[in-house]
Amino acid sequence: MIEILKPVIFITPVLLVLAIGIILFVFKYQRRMLQHQEHLRQLQEAKQRQLLDATIQAQEEERRRVARDLHDEVGAMLALVKLNVHQLTAQAENKEAGQQVKKMLDEVMGSVRQISHNLMPVVLDKMGLPQALEAMRRSIPAASGVEMKLHCNQPEKRIEPKTELFLYRAVQELLNNTFKHAQASEVRVDLQFSDKDLQLTYQDNGNGFDYERLTNQQDTSGGLGLMNLQARLELLNGRFDFFSALNSGTKATISVPIS
Image: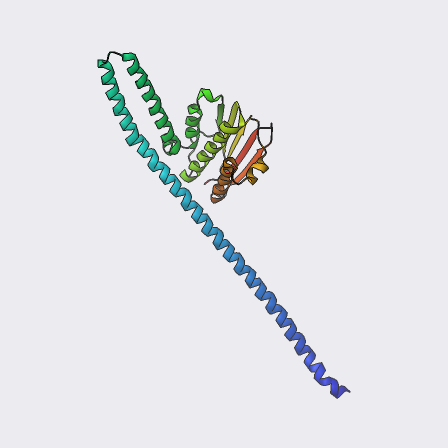
């Protein structure tokens, strides 16, 4: 009997070792596969981030080009037309009509300057985010019925131009939503610089909206605008918190790391 069991006793440990080896191999293989999939996912995310960053840079460069064309070419042409109108008005009998034309030209030139400024604010490049937001605050027309209040703990602070530009665009987007939908009378923008990050808080006293419903509607420009802000903020390793509800106003908080 013992002689019969000897092969079994000898083979059993071998089979056990073989089984353990197979299990370890499968476990190691699955682990390597998971690591490979995670690596591919990270590469894909990095590629998407690079693509998004390149797209944003291209958009901003196009804005700069259009802003320069408006300021240098269209603005110069309008100034020349205004000069000719002024000369003709001085010789014409109906000077009142000439004054009306000059007034209309002044309004058009003002609109062109404003559009050029919105596309690429010179103040942002030269003086930084707080001063650019202050210029934005002053440019809000009284007819809008909206008063913007701005507070900053370090008005002269400069950070990376790319971050400044994003935050300026963020306030533009939020303010545009306020004008279009909120029926607000007051907007508060607060900039708080620390050694490690910058926190921007935007708040209006408007009628608010159902944020969840808006973001679920893919064809809604307001929801897409907010989602675009969130996507762009991820490129800066920042955080975007947004709250809005019917009759409760709107509040957005953006936090970005700074060096």
